[in-house]
Image (tube, rainbow, N blue to C red; front, side):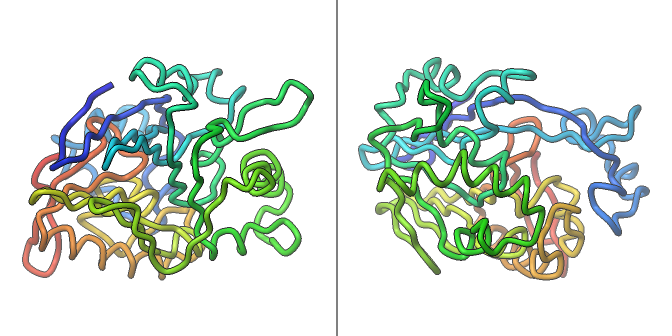
Length: 285
């Protein structure tokens, strides 16, 4: 667990667990395996298990303290799943000095299972209730509409189960705040839509006292995508739109010297980037 200060915002990395689920060519259709080999000096071991030829990813949460509020960005996998491989979110937050009742805001960058599973906790009667009773949960309208189990056609069974466990209890509780296009959290933080991975995928931009960062969710799964932003993951709903969005966000980050903080990077979980002609390069990972 590591904390940095960016302007007036405190940012703490809350790890759950890491794994290597797929090879580079399976994870990123169209990627060039030779590019991974050429960059092995900084990809291994945090981002690529070269011996097993598996992309290394982590499931994690980001804990922010900004303008007097405690903010959780993505909540990982559901209780009962994460315990098989790592540390539950509530236990990790407790280690950072945060109780569930302390959390004021939950940001969901999108509604995939590994980003909303910790939204709720068992109610003791076979159901689920919001894990953070005093928090507002921020959902983008395009994702809520897309993942509505009454109309969803993409993995309907699995996604419906995620909705019922991790989204519907929050909606029923009245704790959800639904937004579209953009949402200003406070003077340091704002949300904007960044579609492609999912229709309502969004990024959280931090600007405070000259420091800048962008919490990029699943816009990136590996720093190799900084070198080849046209390559999307196999998990992207619309790979072409994800590529366009990724190029736009990376352009902003490079031009504003913003720290890029995706959801699943290994190591520190963040990278600094710069322009390399018409492309991008990793300054530090």
